[in-house]
Amino acid sequence: MVRSLPEAEPVESAGDGLRSKCDQPGREVEVFALRADEEPESLARLAAAVAAARQTTWLTVPTLRPGAVEAVVSAAGMELLHRSEWFTTTDLTEHPQHAPAATYEREVRTEGAVTVVSLHGPSGEVAARGAIAVVGADAIADRIETDPAHRRRGLGRAMMSALAEAAVAHGARTGLLIASEEGQRLYSSLGWHHEADVLIARGPVVPSNR
Picture (cartoon, rainbow, N blue to C red):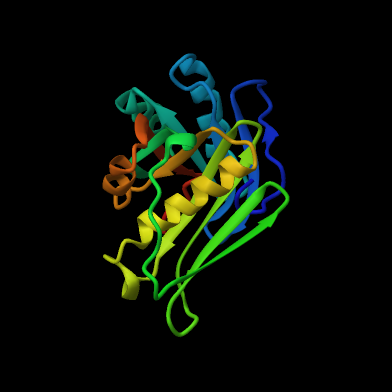
């Protein structure tokens, strides 16, 4: 996993999804749906399991049918968190290359399958950071962010270039990325393709005190 989390485990019904411990406030566990569109019943099973969980759990669902997914998770009593994220892919071997401005220094650290890239400003501060994990011929990019004080200086393009370069050097060809609404224009301009929407719901919902 990109975030150095324990390896994901299959959910009880084989093939429905994967579960990973996040141990973050308000996000103790995350379940990733694998076949919500192909088999809607599998999503219903996952949603029911998450709604009944003892820990706060996020259910992440890539889909071409966001309306149908929203109906299923709502029927299970889950709280819909995000509706506008995209699942995107690209051919990393053809990724555009952009270097950061000369005032920024690039740091690349690789540990196992995960590479973390940091761009440091003139005073040594971290101006931008991102990570990418290589799994076979695929590479998953994550946690890509630019400090507000350093935005609109091309650091997002430079970061994505560095991550793509590192992934290709470790044998990857296809890039995978869940793009936030804020990042979608950047990734599209770099050749990342919108393959599906991503809905994120949370459960169990704790009833408010009356």
